[in-house]
Image 1 (cartoon, helix red, strand yellow):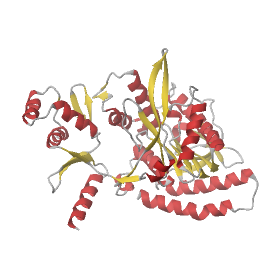
Image 2 (cartoon, rainbow, N blue to C red):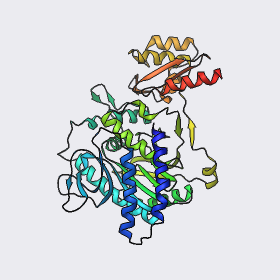
Image 3 (cartoon, helix red, strand yellow):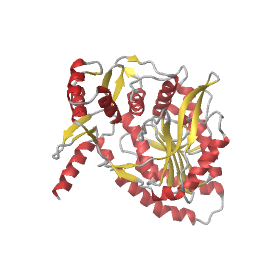
Image 4 (tube, one colour):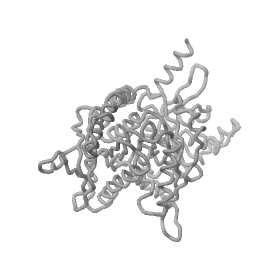
Length: 431
């Protein structure tokens, strides 16, 4: 479904955008209104029915004295305050699902302006959620998604039953970032036209970051989830929906792609709505194709001279290499050995799997493998994480299968993705 809707919205923009580009108007505010109007129309069409959501323009507030600058498009729930004699609203940040800043052209100057505008929204959200008046009983305050993302990224559980696990400073900083990503709005910069190449877009963001190295407001949580410049996008891997595991302690948190920008926009907004309202697995369609992340920025938390900071690295990429690289790849479950299959089966059935279990150790030894090797292979599946001496399932619905070829596979199957993959594989083998 998500591909069908994104293709439909892309067709609308493809048909309507030339009309705006050719409009005989030179008045800048009116031109801005036209592009914002098109963006609002597209967003309205993208929202599922029956959830009471709206798309408005106006301002974000925190219930005290903090108010953002004027925002082009906000996807909101609940009730806001309409400003007298205008079509603008003031909306509380707790009821803002997404904020979209719209630009006719997005180049370096517009990128900086929109980044700063959305950063002001981020500042208001952080002040509210970290303040004394935080509301804790709303459905989107369930922190399980962030804890699961942390486990997928690190291979380590941050919450064991009813108690928190001791984390290092670096791990705790990552977890807190993921928690803020979950409860804050999805922030998007939408440039209808923009950079002519993916490399130029990447270089502009890298230059902006280098100019502000060490300044407040440029940690990973401050970056918009999605920046679109014409046919290219910069995307945040924050676990909702895109996730990349740590590499030597560094988190590849920002990547570029020429993938359909509206599909990416839907992925972010619908993931947020699914966590709040539970949209169900059918909205994702077959979901058998995944984006290939072309990493731009990696980060890690660190203490320097007693002060907590975020270290960020820029990953360069040659233009020819970007052009030649694949954009997507076919999704596949984890192909595992019999040892992993047996231990995963035990976990799925509610049994414990411990690294000091003599029965398990003896059985693995009889098969010529060590528990450590099997444990590492299980952690690589991102279906389990370690908790002290235990391994525990972190997938929402971990399922396993033995293929007709005798191969063992395992995957997250909460949306039926594994079932669809197996059906397609069997059909292809018959053909």
